[in-house]
Image (spheres, rainbow, N blue to C red):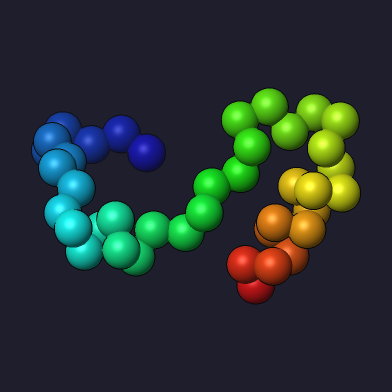
Length: 40
């Protein structure tokens, strides 16, 4: 998504944030799938 408005995160944004996925998930199918499935 591209926006012309600058974004400055607030404390609330950090508190609502979910854990991210691995940057390089290649070879980590089970771990990546587990992380995705755990979120939902």
